[in-house]
Length: 252
Ligand SMILES: Nc1nc2c(ncn2[C@@H]2O[C@H](COP(=O)(O)OP(=O)(O)OP(=O)(O)O)[C@@H](O)[C@H]2O)c(=O)[nH]1
Ligand SMILES: [Mg+2]
Image (tube, rainbow, N blue to C red):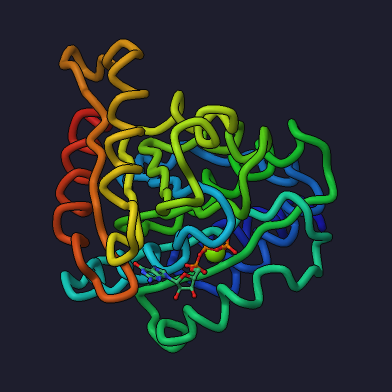
């Protein structure tokens, strides 16, 4: 693609053209250095959602989408899948579950896959996020698929990290091994309708109490541990409040 074509494409992205945005993301997927991106001046909070497979990350993203759309805010969702090839179908489940939003112009949903190594994924995610910031969304959500070093790395390029756990699936030791207890700004123990959720929340609280509180904008932030059942929206308002409270500190 020639330089004038790239400039034209970026102008379309900035004007809110979603197809142009999708096309530009594909170019970045293949080569993260495709564009020299201007500073966006975007104030959109970028929220990363991570956690073990099946804990309810996509369900949580869906619940957040519904809440934000009810407030008429526009949202971009980037699902980052380190394992699947570019054309891979690993996110089909997510895509199907998120179909409600497909006809809504205030929502842009896209999966990102790279063949690459660790650095490659983070680099591509970072480049795509910079691009998405040009498109003037109010909110940007990044969901990672699975737990591993690459997801932990990807979470370094977002503003606020939400770690989702579920009873029995993400106890303190497992989460700690996966490096999740160092990166979380907010913890959600999802599936609170299941036995053991309170116990899991206490485990996590105990584990994070052992690490020093984070300092943000001169204020200390102790990551809250919330309980919720995102399949029916239980706890979504509290979750949103904490996300916004963290965003206020981190974006100031
Ligand atoms: N009982 C119960 N089930 C839930 C809750 N939230 C989500 N689920 C179910 O848990 C399953 C997994 O949810 P997903 O949202 O796909 O989980 P995920 O973390 O995105 O999964 P991957 O993307 O595959 O890692 C689905 O069948 C959901 O309906 C909840 O609060 N309670
Ligand atoms: Mg998912």
